[in-house]
Length: 147
Image (tube, rainbow, N blue to C red; front, top):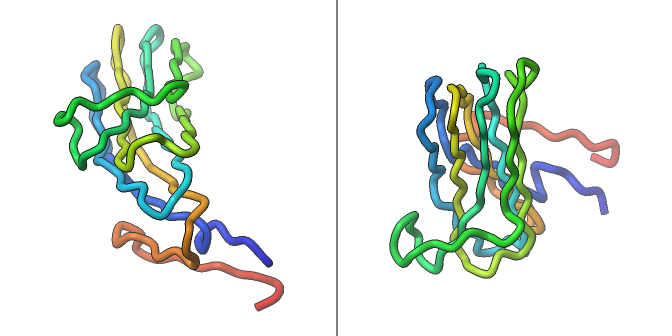
């Protein structure tokens, strides 16, 4: 069986861009029902030297970032201390089989400014395929030598 990224995963933009700053950026909540894993990708723009960036994944039993109290996913964080070469890079956190149904991420920006282009979530290991993409995907195409 040929596997296809578009047929086997759901790609969602969970946060639009954020101007240069030091405030946290919280993504939309993602419903994991029907999927076994999720990968968050924070796409960065201009990053000032010495900015400290942390991408953390939280989970919750409800579709909420606040109630009931969310819990950070164990091992679901990555941190970067930036340098002049950190602009236009990405932070990625992959979580396999979170305990709770709902997940979201928080990109913490401290010490110096960092610009965020967008944050994406890729849900994978779908229980049913092909996967239907969300409406934020304007167009997509897939090619296979067996088609």
